[in-house]
Image 1 (tube, rainbow, N blue to C red):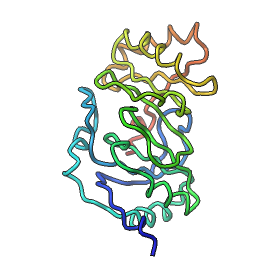
Image 2 (tube, rainbow, N blue to C red):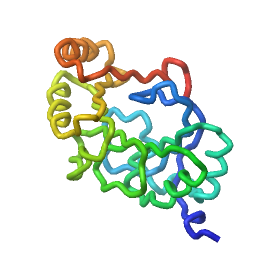
Image 3 (cartoon, rainbow, N blue to C red):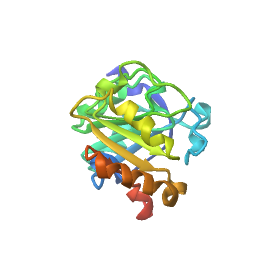
Length: 204
């Protein structure tokens, strides 16, 4: 018996949906939302994920059964802050059933596991670890105010040339910050706009 199949993770929720943000918008995806976060964004829409001890622990074996039955091509591991956990067992399992592994992280912890796609979404509340910019395929900057545009450019300068760059308006401040983003896109064509399309569609 493979020991890694019995490794457990605190799981707030897991579900089949479509990726609503960034480069894989519209792609069928199985999401695993892990409990635990030490970043503490004031505008976070899943604050119930923060307490690592508030969620049931599921084995890799159980998660793989659900993921495989979803028939989705990718599994997105999110949180909370998923990189707080050692994710080697989980990514080993997901690759064993032929799924692409995607992670959405604030970059505040060193990554573990083998990832096909890393979405780095930096937060002002806690500094990112060194090296995260160079291993991420996607930079997603949440725009809460005008200053986040320039702050996002500072992070973009550290990314690889191939990385995708996204500004995403904070959901409750879209009407306020969207003009800032659109104005920046006019003269900075490498950036793209990311919208939380799953929320518009009423999907999880």
